[in-house]
Length: 484
Image 1 (cartoon, helix red, strand yellow):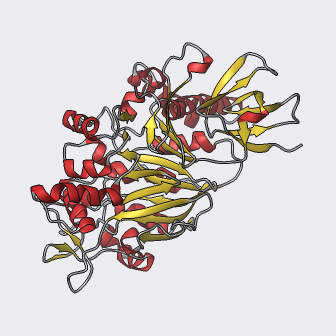
Image 2 (cartoon, rainbow, N blue to C red):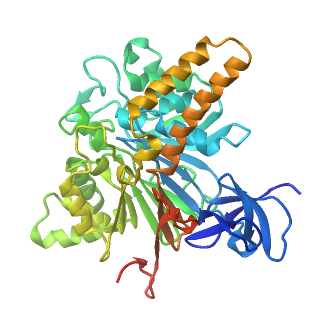
Image 3 (tube, helix red, strand yellow):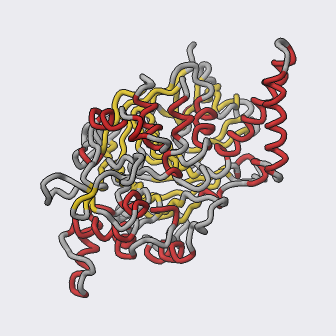
């Protein structure tokens, strides 16, 4: 029989056994893909999952795919893979370097066909969010549906974010046609990385469309309530165009960096009773503008209006899981954080950066204003294991450089094959470290949530995953099961 694709249905984990009722071989996470390779025997099925063959109980598997989000450890920056309940692939940012690319090659390396990412979101044109799309967009085995951006397209010249008037960016690039017209002139691109990245994607022939979410409705196209199979809706909460002038624009927040960050694409994913907020690099100025826009209260609110503003903002921004804005920067509004009211916060940050992210006050505020007695805070750099990357990175780099040199200079034949195997082994080691250590995993069916990360040195098979189960209490309110 042909392999059948199933998914782990036991929450939060299930086991692959060496034989029927035999020794445990691999711990799988709720929602993991499992290939059933044969017929059932006494309620057990032969399976292959996570590069492991064995047997699983038939009642531990189902046909239902969950919503899956992997916040990949891409160092300093953001990068996440979203797999929807109907099996579509979505990327939200890609970090600065090639970490996400290596993760995707590791994740989909067994698939003998081109992979389509139906939706790609570039939250804003900062390199630690878009730089990693370079190798991803150049990969011939990757195809793309619609790539969304925030409408701000960097360009060469004295106005790097485009013309301004009356405190507004007036050239918000909404459509593919407008983007093509802008980037067709090499002088507009110059040596700037972001416009050249978009231009190269446009001419690659592997993307269906590129558009700004600033021109979209309240929901991402195809993800309005009731549109997507599996019940997933995706709201676009930012950027918000100012339409008070002669032409729609985006407010200038004081500097190019503040303006790019402040108009980050903000997405709110809703499935069943579960909400997830992906907040880009919002800053205080932007958060205050969004609070005013969605509630009607001016900033700063008076003492009599503060509670009402927070309550009104929670109808828009409240989330059970929130990706922390700007990697745990100190540039956040306590009012906005109170509106988000997260039970779980995920911080994507790196070690090799000068900003000391996440900031101590940000961590304190997230814990203080988080929902419930034990708010959960995850950070990619805390989840990472240095051992699997290598204890002495410069030694690893030398080995890789030597292997690459040997590959380029080897004579055709077995010497080339040996050199290629050496390079592949080293690259696979890097990919494995990104995939295994540092990634924060989210799985939900719209009723329960499992947050999980790989343990660094499991003492037994059943300790391979560090899991946190969140499920509704008797009143239907989501609670972390570890609360006392």
